[in-house]
Length: 228
Image (tube, rainbow, N blue to C red; front, top):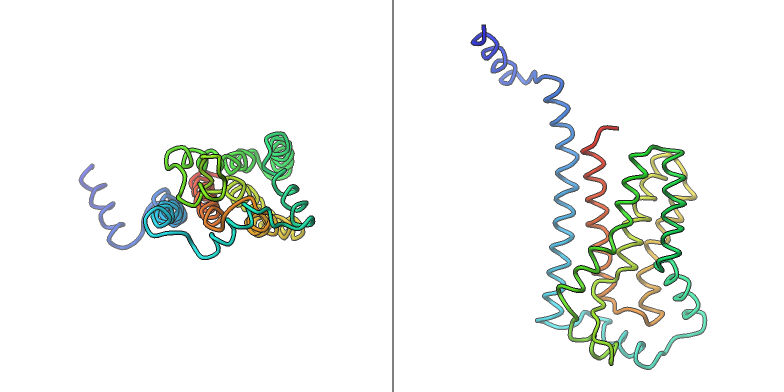
C-alpha cells in the first residue's frame, strides 16, 4: 500500500500535479524569496557604500554638504523645514505617530498589518547598530567636529523609508490615494531635506535609503510568509 502511495506521489510530481499544500508553499516561496533577496542586496549595498567612503573617498556632493554644515549656510526656510522633518524622528513624535498608525491599521485592515507596521518602524534600530559597529567615515570629523559620533547611515531616512514606505503599500492596496501620495512624499523628501538643512551628508542619506528599503523588503517578505 505504501509503495502505491509512493508511486502515485512520484507520478504526480513528474506530471506537474502537486498537492495543494505543496502548491501553496511554492507560491509563498515565490513571493518571499525575491523580497528577501532584495533586502540582502540593499544591506550589502549599504556595507559597500561604507567601504567606499572609508577607502576611496566621499561621494559627489559630500564636500559641498560639509561646507554647508560647518558654515551653517542655510536659509531660514530650509532651517524651518529641517526642524519639521527632524521632529518626525524624535522619540515622542515617533511614538505618537506609530501608535496612531498602528491603531488605525489594526482597526481598518488587520492585526497582522498592524504588527508588521510596528516591525517596519524598527528600522532605526538597525541603522543605530551600524553606526555603533562601523564608526564614523573620514568626512564626519570635518562636518561634525568636535563630535566624533558616526552619522552614516541616516536614521531619520531609514525610519521614514521603512515606516512610510509600508504605509504607502497598505494605502495603495486599499485605494487610499491621498494617504499613499503623502507617504511617498515623506519618503522622497526626508533625504533631500536632511541634506539641504545642513543635517546630513548625501552619503549618509543614501545609506539611510538603502537600509530603509532593505528593512521594508524584510517586512514585505515576512508579510508574504504569513497567512492572511
